[in-house]
Length: 187
Image (cartoon, rainbow, N blue to C red; front, side, top):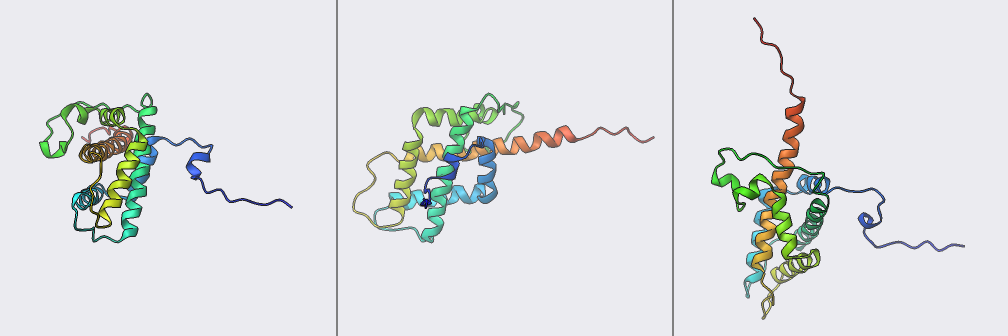
């Protein structure tokens, strides 16, 4: 008689089906709103650096956020691995500074630059360590603060969220423009 063992590894690792970074980001934004995600990231970060307070959110919400951000970082890494297939360069028109967010004009034109720069400075493991530490320190009161710089990875994550949203937005606009037919004018 055979013993059936349950595998506890992620099904994403075992799956023979290849996932693209854009598909994973679309899934991320289906379940997480950009403004809400950035607000929760900011709140968790604020409570992580405070010594004598903890976040008022339900721990399950914070844990879900932790898992979602980890998958988002991996999606960004998949995106730069297969950047040849994904072209998101656009001409910069008259854009207000509010639309740019934290992105520079160059990053707004090509959002992949944000991911390249982030993964040049930090690896996936370092982003995981940062996200885990941020969540850990926001959920309780501790005497000591994190031993590493938390500001730089936080800025990278915020910029990556903006860039990913731009990529998804531009991807969705492109098919709509291609499907539009030019009808002859009525006389």
